[in-house]
Length: 100
Image (cartoon, rainbow, N blue to C red; front, side, top):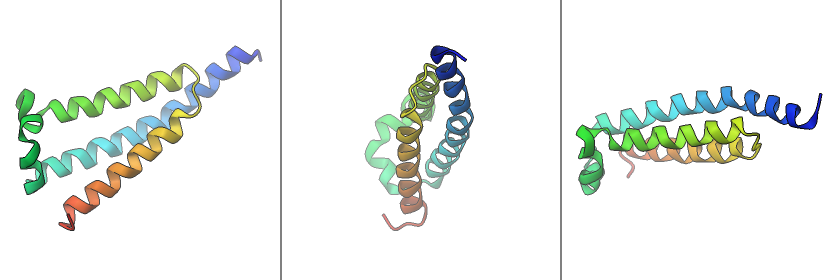
């Protein structure tokens, strides 16, 4: 298998875990938005933009960028997106458990 073809195959293998992490990020994001936490009031301009969909659109753009970079063969994107997802999980836990 040629090097370019191998990198392309490796990039395709990264798409599945990134996509699954993206589903988890959307679920956490939606739960935080539905919680009505007072912290969301401080960024009302962003959460209310586009009928409340601007922050979800931003989440989609981040997922799309990660999928694109993985498809192009950037192996570090899985670690970057996993770290991003981990930070999202901690933030969602803090908000939903009312520790923040």
